Image (cartoon, rainbow, N blue to C red; front, top):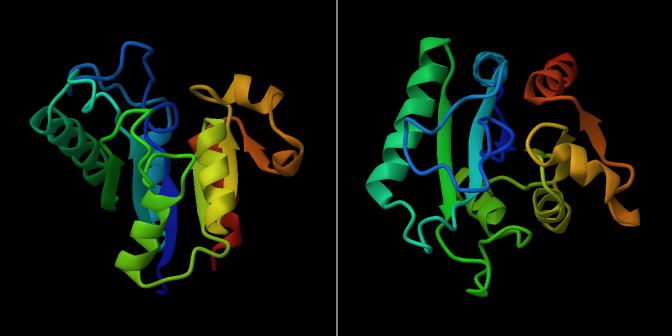
Length: 183
């Protein structure tokens, strides 16, 4: 079966977001249906990846060990449901650091494209924030918005160039649509 890349934001798409930052595996709580959706995408032949801004690292709210523990928990839950997360990339920088990897810049998406030696043309990028959609658009990918996390607010503030973006209630609904498209 041919593999197809998909890129997910983490906080607000896969798990509950927090204005105080998710700083530990105990604080990391999956959104209803998100783990099953990731597993279903994986089982259907998608290469599931995650691209996430993690400025909590720059702010020293968590360290790399805590972040690895969060991602081990995520991977363990997905594996228990029969799926696999192929790769997780993060931007460890703060909002004012001027890096090329912090969304809305497309650096994280380009890193995944280079790793898998693919073009991002048409690759679904699912996010809940304007910066996720902007990064996807700048990379030539397919921006998809979910109404979880910041999504309800984001859908009301979309700029004209992103008004036609696909919008779903949550990751499970977006996955159902993508699975219907995938041979």
